[in-house]
Image 1 (tube, rainbow, N blue to C red):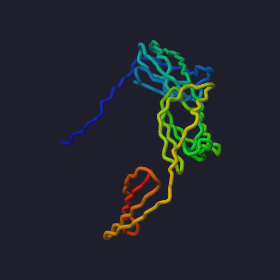
Image 2: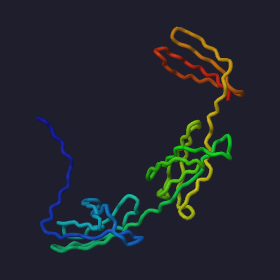
Image 3: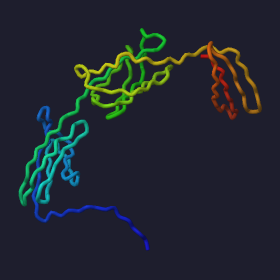
Image 4: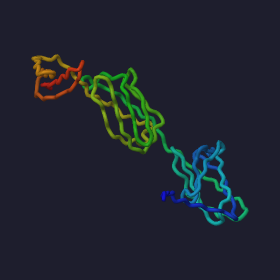
Amino acid sequence: NEFKKYANARIKFATEGGSISGVVLNWTNNNPVEGVKVSYDDNMVSTTTNAEGEFSFDFVMTGEHTLIAEKFGYFSSEPVTTNVEANTESVVNLTITPMPQVTVTGTIRPSNDLTSVVAGAEITLEGFDNYATTSGTDGVFTIENVYANNTYALAIDAQGFFPYNDTIEINTGYNNIVNLGDIVLEIIECHPVTNLQAEVDGAVVTLTWEEGTGDKFNKVLDNRIDGVTIVKTLNRDV
């Protein structure tokens, strides 16, 4: 016998009930809000507001029902309880408040010259929402409409520099502007190599060289060129 497993489902039939209708408004300006999810009884039933912020539920069972409105970028409404009577329409209006948004800015500078700037750096903010931008010729970047009072992962990439990563708290700031100030990228310094030596062992070529002054460390990089494996053993001075 073939065994079939079905998901549990809750079905309610309203043989005698009423309806609920209303409008969702923006608390700050009293304008209707489109695309708001309105639900009642812990998401038992939900719908979405139209362009006029209107919603409605038909065939609602009699008794008390608690409604709530939710939309991304807004604080959820306060729960509102209404009593539905048979063959009667209950009108419930809800309000939601936009989350504060700020402009995030900063200046990218190179570690070898803090009076200079880094243009063309790619900046990303990831968290409650995700954002991306590029630093200008003056090294300044600006990201608008960032949801405040949230934690974000800040990442910066620029050619010739080590990747920059940090976790930052974005609050409301001054006049809704959050200035991260100077962000310094560590430059990848390249020095002429010296004492380059090659040792051939079959298909493996081991390259050894020295660079700069200071403490040495070794690093092995594997590459394949035209079927010949080259293992670079880097004796690099930093």
